[in-house]
Amino acid sequence: MSGEDTGTAGGNGDGDGNGNGNGNGNGNNTAYLVELASALRASGLPDERIDATVADLATHLEQTGTDAVEEFGPVGEFAGQLAPPDGAGAAENPVETWRWTADTYADEALLNRFGAEGWEVERIDALGRFVSRRDTEQVQQWEYRRELVSLLGREGLDERLAPDGWEACGNWLVYAWFKRPVAVREGPAAELAAPPPRPAAPGFRAAFGRRFRWTLAVTAAVIVAVAVTVGVLEGDAASGLGFATGLLAGAAVPLALMAVASWRTERARARADSEAL
Amino acid sequence: MSATPADRRASWFKGVLDLLVLASLTGGESYGYEIAKSLDAAGFGRIKGGTLYPVLNRLEEAELVAAEFRAAEKGPGRRYYTLTDAGRAVLKEQGAQWLAFDASVRELLAEGGVA
Image (cartoon, rainbow over all chains, first blue to last red; front, side, top):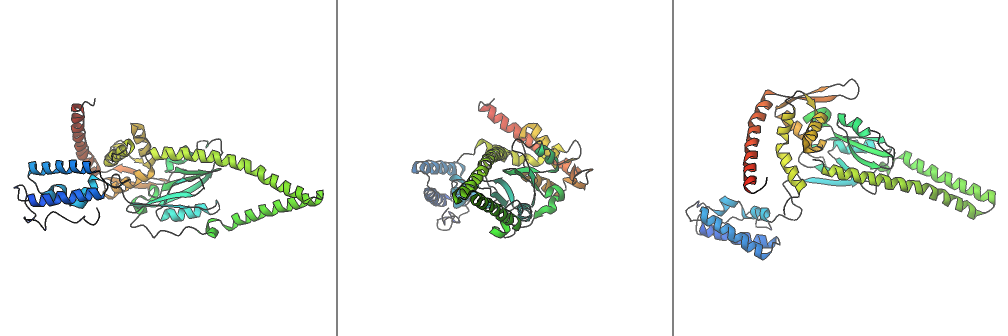
């Protein structure tokens, strides 16, 4: 693994490295096994396992009379197969991941923009961010849509959209997002030859559009105006403040309940999704 | 070190998905969702679009299936896939190879006491 991956057993031994079956690769084979043991040690494999593996391989080479490089391949690669790094599974295409956020005034446009660059949303995390991935070798384009759902159920929405290739990819409060590969419409033409450069995460202004900021500002202004009015009418600033606090707390409770319900739905969906092939 | 049951199943599935798609088209033309549904009904579970469509693309590029986009009466329309003669030949040849492989696996597993 470390820096030894191109080393072959040939090159410093007595043979010329192409002995195949007549025992003239023995010196090379020994060098190969020594190098292999050191690569396995560097990868953190326990000594007893290394000893057992190397002994086993030596017997194999002896009995088959083959050259180690021909039989097992370059020593670094073979060591990597014998002791893959943690988390390395079957050879999959490399994947990029990315989390980003946007309000519901800007999300569809941004989702479709990033989808056209190959980003697939897998789920929405507890902070409401889109958890996205992109296969860097086989880059498919994706398209998205958002639908309103009730907290009590989706009333067959998934089944209605599925025949056109839409799959649920996230829930947040009363919103459900769906994705589908553009290949559903365009076939192979929807595949990108190479992934475009990774986009910068949308800035605050792009992620939270003017309408969202206006809605927030108007809501805050209304709460302040009502609080001031209550304070003036009752001649007591504290009661105006209390009214505003009560208003905010009253709104926070159903919002929190909605957030919990939606988070549970999303968690169940993401779990089912992870079991799909 | 060893793969989880889900990983192992996914890797078997990926090795044979193209043949399964070709096989699912022997009954006539179909579209992505219908193909996914037939694989699900056959016991493979839900197939994600991200798994199925790259395979359909590869089969189309290799001219093993032909695709045609057709407008629907309502809705945006769909791409319908049909098996080509080349696809039928590949299915026959590689399907037979798979069955031979499967028979060897079964034989060895039976020897190993797996019923």
